[in-house]
Length: 181
Image (cartoon, rainbow, N blue to C red):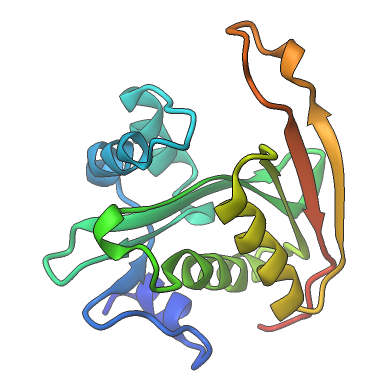
């Protein structure tokens, strides 16, 4: 187990499915993460290049779940918001189809927020389209587990998107989170 895996898994509350570990993404994970995002059929797919950059530049604020062979099967990408350094912005969450329905996304989110708490993070932000029931449940249940309030407001109206037909992006602001370090 790497030091990053130990940091992510140090709490008994992280209930990983058998054979999976949490880890910090590496550049060589970028292609697998891109495929998981593509195959989710719900995420806005970024270029494959952007996932490589994400694994290089934002690895400390992102997380992957690895199977027994070490390959990524789920991920969360995030970054610290420059204007609010106590806020983690969760960019994307995706779980490979074969690993869905096991609470893996919630475990990744708990592990990641526990790790970034050491960086001074006390809250998270994310945007969710109204039709994304799974993400709505994920972040609402996260707030409930952590006893944190949730504020919601439309951040970007659909007509702002140049490609048309995009649902509004609703900003979820969750926090403050309890100190769990």
